[in-house]
Length: 503
View 1: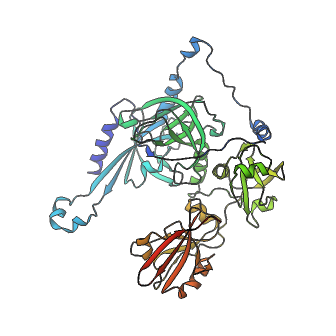
View 2 (view 1 turned 60 degrees about the horizontal axis):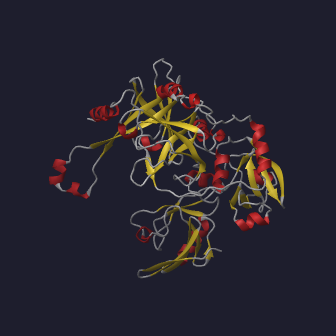
View 3 (view 1 turned 90 degrees about the horizontal axis):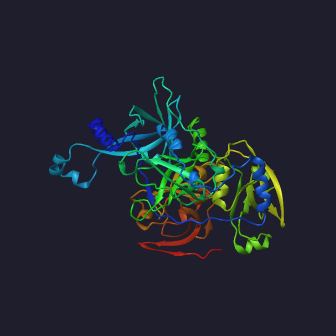
């Protein structure tokens, strides 16, 4: 049955020759993007030392306007593939307890989906795609543009980056592959091509420009840092290629902003440099991004003016962990990080991205503003430590927090959770359905428990010490995404919450 359903799904993808599919994730999002500052000249000089830039020119004649993108598209299309998946879905609805409904619903349902992928290593048969294209699949079939088909297996995936790596056995044949480009060289206005299979009509190439860079807040990850394009990307393009005009892979098409599900000219792609970092992590089977041991916040107009900047760009350091690479380099609270290796850092999101795309152990130069003067600070990137140990603990019965699972945050665990969490504190990891907190919504997974009955909670041990005195009544403070909320519970069932002012 599973194979038959896959065959029917593949038939939809063959409406056009060389079908390549993708299922785009439609999201409604908001974002903010910073601009330059008073030290732009210094940052640009550092960037200029890295490598010569390609000169951009506008068409100068009718002959130039009539030039075609066909050679670039023709060379890239064979390396973009169709991905067919099948997943067995078993009906767990309450109606299945009725023998009548069980009789008519005894067979499991097979859910099918289409997606795209990009071959990045033809000799090894390695294919990059979106995690949401293959997540939970029981069977994965890859079809090339020339209709060769291969069974694929999932090697590595990361939901935070929405990336997955597949492997097929090319049976001795060298598959066509795309070379990863340098997404940091992309500029707003650059021409790009998007290759995918919109709505299952078959492999389609669309053309547009890079509309914006450094778009954050699009996905679930605090390390996401998208390339925005107006090339038409529709449902069916996920996992496909965003191509630079040099024929190299600039990004993996992953999401669209749409009210109706179709293209509104706002698409997002995971940059190739993030893909490169993901492929490095696949060798070890675990995604560990570099750590500097410093936390910061975006500048306001006032803090920028006080620092001598004409615009609020950069990251104001609010804390430096003792013994961290940042501390060893002499970075301190109050410093403003403006650039990393000459690449501008406009906000905390771009700082996290720049660090995440660099390998652990590499030495980098931070352009820092201190006391109104710019200086370069060199530091070595390290793996985030798991100190303190996470100490996963289920709260015992007898109090309002009973049943929830909490843990100590550390730099390593905060990165693993990937929700923009701080590097210390007590985080709620799980809230089972029968727990009192599940009925009230406070606390929820990802919340930090900061205080219980007036006592600060910094570790799981602190929470365990205060709970025996909180059986009949409890007042606790949680931090949810930077917003602090105080909740109070009292037997036999009185509960309420209020938002606290930002301190």
